[in-house]
Image (tube, rainbow, N blue to C red):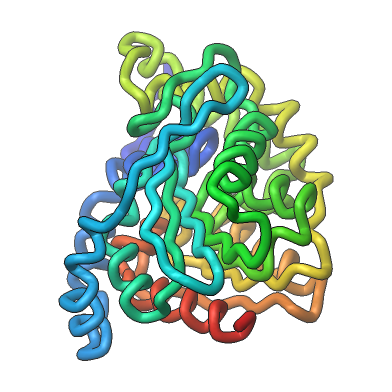
Length: 314
């Protein structure tokens, strides 16, 4: 067997980290030094952001947990009540609602809006669902929860990484519920060509095999479940389209999830640009100095973009 050079191993890790989950934790593992450097290079918090965090600190304690039944399993929703639009934050693969813990109070303090986070099935406080990961099931969970909470319109949907798939299907099926969206380095349909799907599936197989040795951790369980139908699910996703009636603001990280693979990194950027060009009410911005983990590396940037979206739809 030929030896794999370190640079090739790093590329494979970077590929496999996003191949099935686009999971932030995987990318950090693959590119730890680069991410640390990006975090150090991130601009200091602005006075406005610092004040918002301080004034919103108490709001985090005001978040209320609702366990909502969705097709026989319970899904955890966390609500910080406000007025006006509902900002719904959806985490990437392998992450639960706690991913947004530093952003929620700031958004609530700045906008006064209701802010909702939730744990997708098998993550956080939500119950697991057996079988392959099903984006349509995730969409059903989200709609059931929002409907039960009385949130049926004027939703600002903020989706990171794998949650971009949930957002695309949800918005396609429920365009009147969503008034605007912020897609944060999100999985977008144009990226998942047959060629790219094959590359990602092959590159990720070692991680899947490793996860099967410890299948009970939430992140490993989701990795395994996503792998079970990755190819057909993403072939179908590639054919999905975002409703022209719903504005979309797209944030792309400077390093992308593929910092170790320039070819795939460029395909990621090209897919975002292609998505934005498909309708006039879409914008594309780059989070400079950031890894795929934009909400952690550049929280001010993400908060500002969400607030611009809220204002534009207000």
